[in-house]
Length: 371
Image (spheres, rainbow, N blue to C red):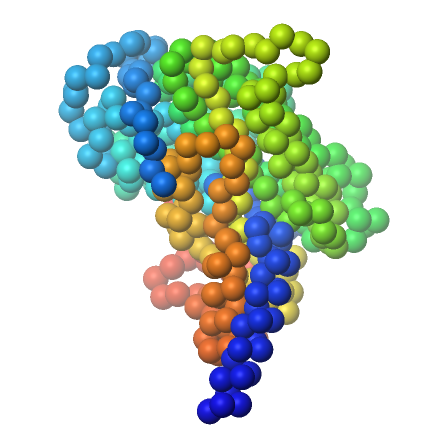
């Protein structure tokens, strides 16, 4: 017994050391741009901002008098306006699902032709939900501008904007990646995030008396370590926290040598780390070894990630914060469960195959359909 206890203690220490390699967001944090794939995010202590409701598709100031409950038990005045990019599948879809279940108003965008199907599934699940969808290609400036206008005109007020859209370009040696894929990954993940962030901030800064929040999704490479097989993806994700930190400083301190601008609205910018999520982008080009570890130990289903992150997103009152699913404590616990207690993966079998649950639908590589 003493030997077994000592072994568990050693394994726990090893787990703590290993946690630094996997948290936060040090491995692939897949997002979704939609159909375009290569290779295959303490409660608020202040009162919520005054709400702006909808009237015949246009923004209109409303009083705070309740006008009837929306889905999730909130009145329209209590419901926040949420914008999510890359929401036709994966964790973006799960975010929308979770926000709608809480009664908030949601706009989703994606380049995928499945966007309408995703929206229909959300409306069927959430009767009376306030949901709007429109095509969005984050790599196209005109598309992003139109999407921002669509969000503002339909929501009236944007409280939370989540830049979730992204692609990974496939897992392969950098020299084997076609230059067109290199360009696509950079345009979607980095330029797309910059486009969306600027257009979102143009709306948010002009919302007088409103505190709004913008989240940029980080992933593999965020800490600066190597991401072999995902050179382009890692490089673009490394830029997300730098961009977010720079924006937070500009908003709070201004730019040295220039007069600090005081905007009508108060904008907070943050990073959002979903960790490893069982999606097309995670399982594409994966090997049995990768699926056994780290996927089988640390990866989670989209709904699990959204259920954890959405409350954290809504309860984040600061500036320049990092909101994470795979926290260090969670990584240590999962590693200890697997290697000290011998707990089997719920999603990956001993041979590295995806465990297909009865009644669920899966594609050829084992990605479970969410709708």
